[in-house]
Image 1: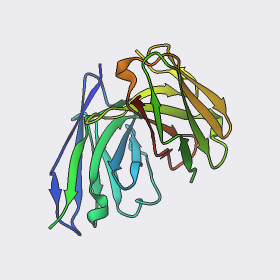
Image 2: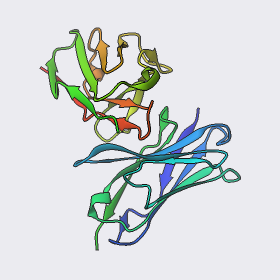
Image 3: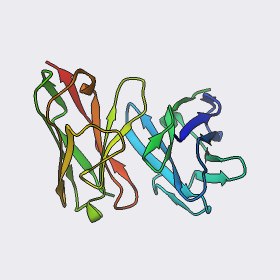
Image 4: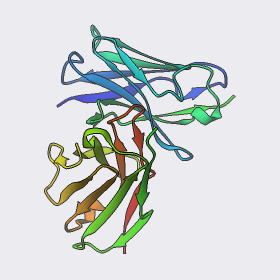
Length: 112
Length: 108
């Protein structure tokens, strides 16, 4: 049974870069696609983007200029970087295997 | 982008009753790539239905999905106590993937 676990800072200052990592256990990260999704009270569920294990990506155009998703197959991990954050980026961030299996989520607050 | 509108916002029902949730898309969903999720407080969304009507692994058969084009429905045939939650639809036929705003199914 594949499981996912998000990790990273819970507090990020405005204008800085939010960085999260998702560790995949119980299966290989190869041969599938891996997503980041966030949920905030104001905007509900918002898809951020996904990456194939090969490295190709697809990002939400609303965030594309600030988002980078990368994969490290040797560590069975994939990562999210979101630059120039503001309070509007405060949310619970989820990583997912496609959209089939989700991590438990991690709360990230943007505040000075 | 495709906007998904769910109705009603809240559904008040009793255990054993039938629940019918609606999801309407602003344009046709490609290949009926429409999914439904269940979310309980403090938990991540859980996939129930994908490709409009296929149940995800381990999902009871009281959950069923139907529809096509721009109109989709999630039906829970007989509500169990554990079914009271928020339900979201999502389309993944066109980028960007988008979600509806949710329907809360609460105990009457």
